[in-house]
Amino acid sequence: QVHLVESGGGLVQAGGSLRLSCVASGRSYFGNDMAWFRRAPGKEREFVASIGRSGGTTSYTDSVKGRFTISIDNAKNTVFLQMNTLQPEDTAVYYCASGGAVATRPAYWGQGTQVTVSS
Image 1 (cartoon, helix red, strand yellow):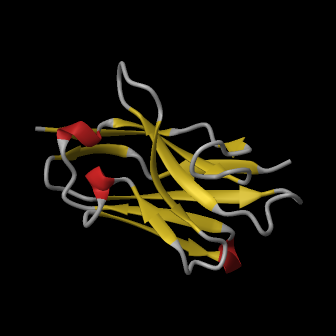
Image 2 (cartoon, rainbow, N blue to C red):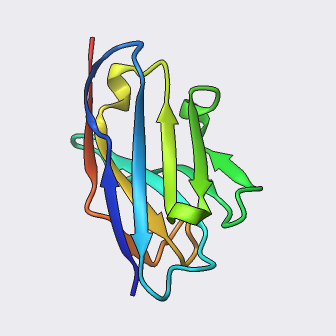
């Protein structure tokens, strides 16, 4: 089992920045790729970004390329999502995910953290 705990969400004005963190624990965690997803009000959950366990391979959905950066600190079992130039359409609950086919069907999910961007 893998336990994922997100933090760092909040309310920010358009153009601002936030950094989300996700701390992972559990015997099954090690070796897993990591990802961030989000669910906006009234919409389905969507893929945002993923990173290989070594940190060498990253992938982003088109709408966040150039604004969001995913990174990983293996010593702290933590994955980050740096979000810059936030826009109201980025408002969503952001979820950390791990394992499985991480970009499409992750095996494990965190509880989510709310990000609200005001115009």
